[in-house]
Length: 262
Ligand SMILES: [Zn+2]
Image 1 (cartoon, helix red, strand yellow):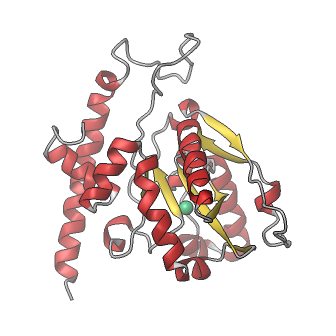
Image 2 (tube, rainbow, N blue to C red):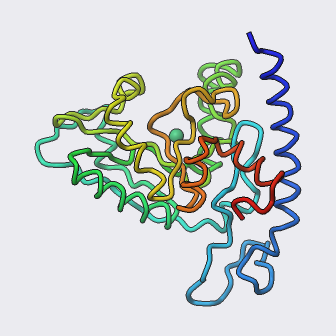
């Protein structure tokens, strides 16, 4: 019913995001650690202990905003595996949870582990289900699906390589263990409102936001995903959560009011 208003809002947002991209590109050399600008050729600085990651934890990747070209050269990823509690039975559809090695950006992983331990104290068990996925891997997936099912299927169901937030290493999809049973089916997880409600209450304390909230589908371009968390750092996460914003809205407001959240 508010189709036109929504379209207008979306157009404004997209225009704003374009400005933001330009703004961010201009600001980049100033916002590193105050020394010289980081090399852009992918080489690492030769210091032993980098003080700050040379990338932006507020990076915006969505269906209209591509992963920065140098991101995969500079992001620092760590390997992680799940520990499946005793007595939990796996089957062939979910044994990947025990065997896969997940890659997550280093600060995001530390924050996730702290949150996971905190939740476990209250009997809420979350596991890593899907984390970093390279652009190259997404290209392979696209090619496989295109060959098997055709281009129309790809356009509808497969993320365009370069445009998935999972490329950043800062996005984590979780699944649950409830009463000793793994719950990793999307519909089943959406039905677990109470458990996810308790998890969502704690996200910001650990620097995460719920990236695709209910009611913001027209802005994020995604349906509600209670399992998809995005690391942005504690300060930004608390601000975004307190204001009830999506990352898109938050970044747009930051451009309009540069003193906010900087
Ligand atoms: Zn996800």
